Length: 478
Image (cartoon, rainbow, N blue to C red; front, side, top):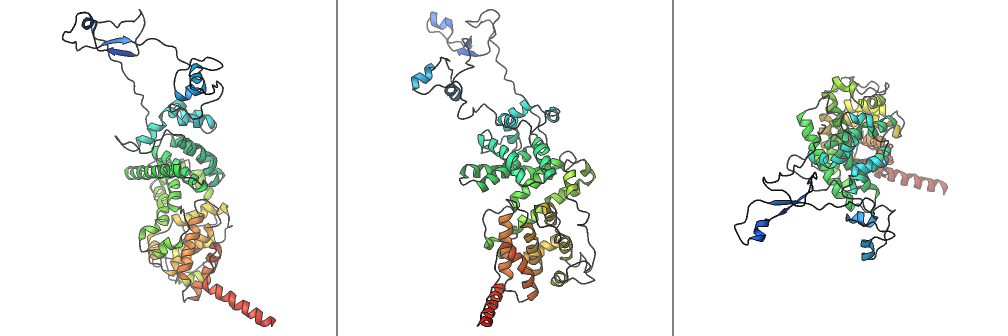
């Protein structure tokens, strides 16, 4: 929700009546006033009862240094601008440079001012002029990020550091380009960034996903880990409050954008560890990485009438394929693979209400015919966002048909080449293969071979088959 920036003006105190400030020339205004706690009467007539009134004297006028050397600017002290070496540099025995910029940015230099200067084509002046000027945006980013935390709260992590600037630049230059199709990228780089300057939880989400990406590509991530945790926490908390308050035409694009970025956080797995999978756990929260992907569907259903006005409408339309019907709820086995239908115990009388596997299998079947590459990512992604609770229940029960269907979908996702997808896909798919490789059902073992090959896991029965075939070849040669 857009924040209204407010300028706080500090009013100077009025002078006490009947007294004039010493040292003021006629017509000169006193902007800075220094209190003199002893009156002139006290100095001339000895100790008397001190006056409670304070006498203010004008600050001695001084000339500001505009063209000082880089060392003085960095230290924020006045430079006498003497050349070739100013007095301060000469006194400290350091090189005096009037051409180089400071090694570190001034604290007073707002990070978004730097960001806008480095990316002048990122924001449209015309599009922002209706809500806030670039100058106001530059001055108020810190206020923006703090405003969502609630009155009286201050974030533990500073927002006015070069790290946030690096995160914004990285999001613009790298993170988005690794994850988006052409139209989606255009939306993300333009409208989403503009919305983030008005929406605290979206700005937190952008910084969070960018720092997460930086943590995945940099060897030393200590500085980014704290910021990553802070901004994810702020994004999730503020997004949850916004969804709980209202979802309407005015905030749907902010919520859509944040929800998509939060899906990265929930799906991402930092380390390959099949034993930590939900497959080997009784904790239902270990499946949250899949369950939470339905958030966008929840939002879409609440704003259906306004969707054509959304900035994401073109992207949603681009993902639509007339050959794929994600609303296919036909009963029976028609157009289903016979092996999958047998595994899921689907007969001609089965419906999406009577069989929990018919709906996910109906959605999965057309995906199997698509090109296995990043161009199919949005269609693959739709599958996990439209799963229903009965199927989740079967997954938590570790029912073999449910696990096999998920393993095949994970195998398709392995082809999309996304930085936040690969580890999760390999780890969960390997866990399913480990769980089911001792199954006594030959159909389960046969349908496991494709997922196992995709994630690089050698099934036990495949090892035995290869060993048997090798022995047979040796015997035939001898």
